[in-house]
Length: 119
Image 1 (cartoon, rainbow, N blue to C red):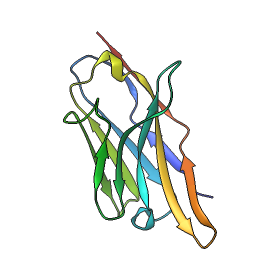
Image 2: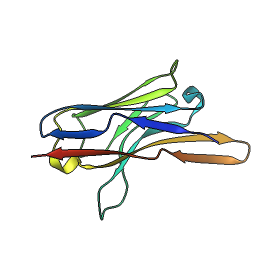
Image 3: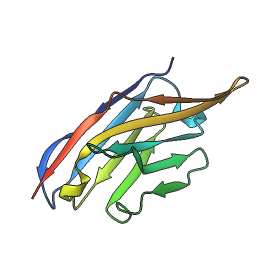
Image 4: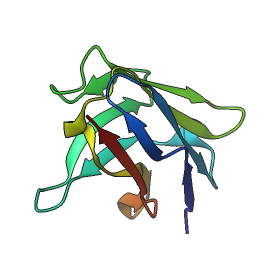
């Protein structure tokens, strides 16, 4: 069972920055993808940013140019640097990792960390 431990959420004013961290209990270098999703009240969970095993990064349209995902394989940790935060970035942010084995693909989620941005 893979465990993901998130940290770094909090409450900030618009325009400020936060950095989220997600530490995995497995080697992230072997993951298919690892990244961040978010879910605001009453809305569906959406992609924020992810990084593939090949190093390719994808970002949600609303965060492109403001957020940056990075990883530290030695620490099995992925980071999300969030700059120029907006009130609409308010959500619970979930860390996600997908691994694969002989039995198929496996998706794991963190417990979520709240990010609140006030105007």
